[in-house]
Length: 242
Image (cartoon, one colour):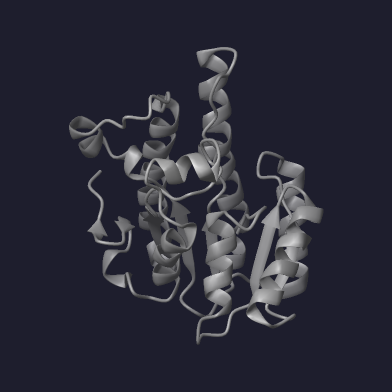
């Protein structure tokens, strides 16, 4: 999973998994290996252990970086039991609409597809009910969009469309991978106080919750608590409408 600082969903998901009664080895990834190592050090200190985490450099917008990360994980571990796709961007103030939409879709959809397809062979090597998880958003729900608009004034059309596309990809992968025993979900963690669309402080001012709360929704899927909702977009209170 991707993480850079101790305020993100990736960081808090890793932290919660490390403190679970279940035993995990958690591979933490990010574009800057220095920042990933920093996150791993913080996580290890918090969990009071040094052998639960490992760091992998990964830029999902680079095919070469994806291939290198795949080779590292395959060499070290030989398999993946869970792949959590949480890398996403919410760019603002781009020079043009074309650049805004291209940039958003490149990371949130195209690169997520690329890394997922690359790592599926390692999920197929798992003997532990492999799981594929995408971090989605209620903003990608057409049903919710018809009845609710945010009041913060940000241009969210490209982000919304990218999450709707990700939801469709998740549904297709769920159908495709079911016969191989891979369980697939989208998880909507709600609005969390992260730096996704500005700063954590700004997000908190709009009523965002601490990212550990959203991360718990991801952990619940990892630990089998949402196995009645495979192939769906789930959140803390149920299943999100499309």
